[in-house]
Image (tube, rainbow, N blue to C red; front, side, top):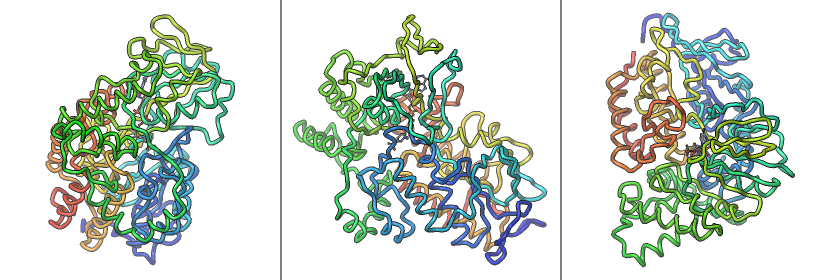
Length: 551
Ligand code: N01
């Protein structure tokens, strides 16, 4: 144990901490990650932990992303906590894919069942967190003026939580309403009788556009990059589904553990381009009819072999051309500049069908970019003007690093996280950064996170961090820091792993940070698979945490 460093608080000692007292851990964010991390530290290790949350309720991603059509693309019975069978048994999902409102309700149910609220401070956005070397603790401040200190700082801020709002001339002069899908109002937005411009055709735009189009007078979609999408085939779950599921929880758990993505399926060991044409067409058609993310996993080499990817991409292109009746619109919607799956593949409900509606128009802003916004609408480079009552930005996020860099984190010797990551994020296992003792980043850059069914990645991270903190406690270790060499080596490995695949070929993807002007282009998520990552982390723990300095 480092001399003069405070040890972790005993369970019996943790009640009634005042704001000036030293917590064992401050957790930032009350979404899937923050809630489980609080439960793990408080109820499994008996530590004093507090959550600071910017919103006025739990839910994280699902608290903020309330846009029309918001729905998860993992299947309901897999998009939930698996650490506690009782939670799985008590909560019954209503549809194949959970909608935003149902997920938010589920997370509130978990927070109540686990009695977590009493250790969450709401409406507290962390805007500064400074490592105090003399006090062996983090000093954390929120924009509401709260100041707390803790031995450990754990960020649970989500990978997609910092909205990417384009800087467009004249936007502030617009007379109508402006929305970003990631910061959607709590009250319902009524599109009835309105002319709506939607900017962005990623997973979010693809979900929102069909729903907005059903209500609005007319919708103009401004598309920069056409996107692949596969039908979700959502629908209500049969009444008996829940009963059958709860009899087999362990089977589902094992299936997800065995998979690269944390979904309950594994791609069969067959290459697409080597499969005879009739057979592969039948498999692709069956995958398309079944819908969802499993389509991509019909073959094992889609992200590894261009020949196979070309066939799958062409299959989707022909579907788009078949669905969309106006040939010119169909051609605009056909993706041409990246292989399928190298950007996060959306799944949809009637996305391409929506362009057959009379009240929906598609505009290509790759070749005719937005010039400005004026009082009444959007002006394009060619001089045309699109009148609008509302503009919806479905323009995504400053992913994986944005929310972390906004927190004003300052580590050892005054090093800011922004400086440490000026050439791109560098982490060890996605969880720790050299120069930032006792800081853990759940699903940080360098983790599998966004390439997986998130709750599975989150539980793996939190279980691992919790075990490390328990180990530290038992060994009287007070300082845990990633070594520079380990962080460099891990980050190089993350890049090399991506370069073995087709993933970096989508040069404009948010995986690379390319959607945010000026952001370093580094492939951020770890793509070897959650199963491989889990095994590697387990080995690191078994070997006594090489790559970490434990003092
Ligand atoms: O964001 P995106 P998203 N001018 O970055 C365009 C998860 N998610 O919110 O491709 C004009 O993917 C941009 O164009 P381009 C999921 O992981 C999950 O849709 O950069 N356009 C693109 O079309 C997902 O990947 C679920 O050329 C601009 C769009 O806006 C992630 O969140 C649902 C622009 C942004 O697409 C992010 O998805 C929703 C500009 N200045 C989201 N800037 C489910 O679980 C950006 N664009 C189902």
